[in-house]
Length: 147
Image (cartoon, rainbow, N blue to C red; front, side, top):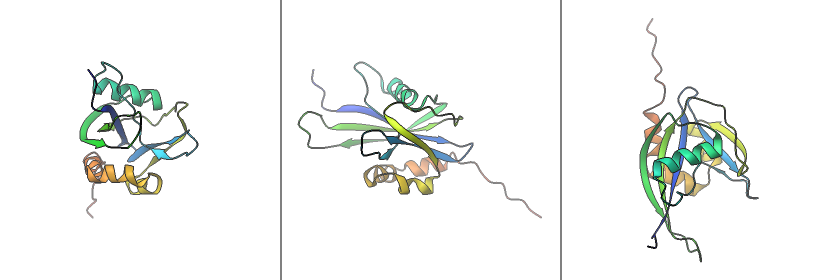
């Protein structure tokens, strides 16, 4: 049976210990910054694909994850089918990133810095699907000191 969509997890990786999101810089000549993700392999469930992609691209283990959005991407491409992005917020407790050959660099950035690095399409996907609001729920709470 032919599938209508290629399905792939997209991992917005957040570390509440440093209050930052992980970005990876592609090694494809364009060198754009992105969030980790990829395609689900045949007969692989989406959670296993999420964990595999994150580990392959960063060597990080996800401690907690939450489905935040599902977003179809329709592109006119002669071979690739429309893609279904399945966006997860992934919580990690390590900063020890080891990138794969797919990337040339990584950077931990604050949520306010994301738009300085991400292409508009990725930024719109995160904003329009409330990913930044979900991150806010995991941010460390600063306790006010009364004098």
